[in-house]
Image (cartoon, rainbow, N blue to C red; front, side, top):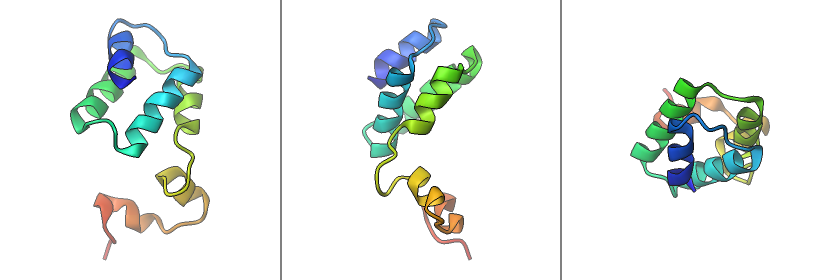
Length: 87
């Protein structure tokens, strides 16, 4: 889905909330490459984010172990920096 989403966003086509949620599920699950993530986020920023896209991103991959659930659960954000514990 991320490849299709990149193409849509490059062409200035807004994504639905559901489409954005699926893309962020892929990103958070590790299914997307770093290049895909960079391309998607850059294109989205250049196009301008819609309320639906922001909502879908916030809902994306709300499962156990995600950064979102970690922070909302009161986790120590120092452990998110560069994927390791901050000194």
